[in-house]
Length: 192
Image (cartoon, rainbow, N blue to C red; front, side):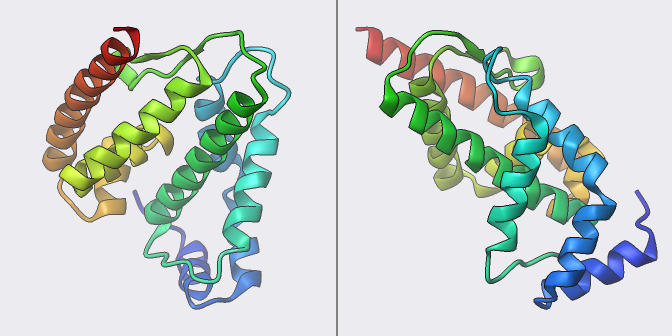
């Protein structure tokens, strides 16, 4: 994936703290951010008033409010955005759970992994499992963030994390299997 020189320069400036450069990068890649947000939102409950534009805007506000952004490349920028979108959705799920609005089903599938998430509390379980995965294997956790939350391809993930595509594929398969097992164990524990 080759980066237009203008975006590369802007990302370097944004990494140096130039907020105007950051705003310009976001404007240039806005359609791509909407695609990532759409991918994240399709896992949300139907009928939710929060839409892809709102997710992109909330993500922008969180990132723009950050004092330090360590941006290395375009792929890394998208990884950071995907991770921020994940946090926005997790925070929203936690707020929904505390309001006890209940109902509905959310299905979060790790692409080919089929990990159903039925309630806001189960989204929290996914987050807890990802934290455990990060403690066990940080790189696998980052691969999940890129692929699942960032909507990145294997190649984009490899670029963002500065690893080989073979490593991404291996980590992705291992992380999906581990998360499936963890979430199944969490569900059995809460049922029994």
